[in-house]
Image (cartoon, rainbow, N blue to C red; front, side):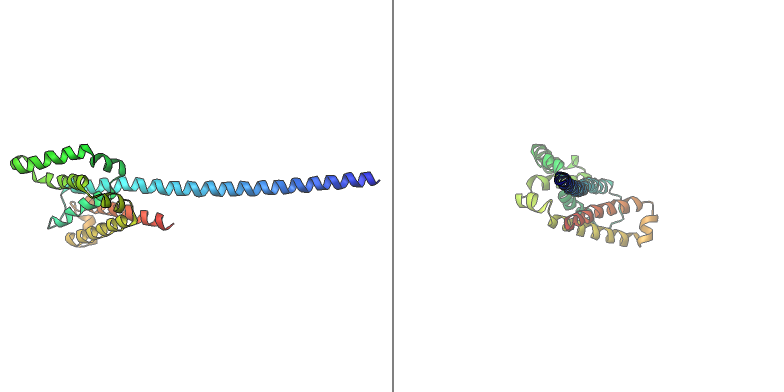
Length: 204
């Protein structure tokens, strides 16, 4: 009888240990799922920032090339140059700031100085961008770009361009109804999406 009670107690102990192990395993599974979910979320947010950076920089280049805005001065168009400098993806930035960009800048300077008739006006802004990429100090290229400071500057540029474009178009509604203003308005809105999302990700 005593042996039966002993075996029964051993069985109960084994069942208790098994229950505890199963409980711990379930907690580990839940923790692993939560960790995987958080990592995936952060990875997705990071991918979103990179993707929007490409979109924003190409939208700025599109606006620079389009040159069909209703802006009355070139000052607003010139603001696209620092925006592109700050938002250009690292792969493209490193490529253009290297020897390729130096050769392009060299040819542009030579044409501008010695063959001005062969240097069209529409090349001034792209040429200025290449020069900025090539000669930018290390502090600007590596400590302002890609940081929250550069993101805030990009946001201010986008907001200023949008409100000036709406003012030049005669109001918010006209900026979406005028044939020449719709593409520019959408392009400027894309300039705002990247810095806003980048700041949100930094806060999260």
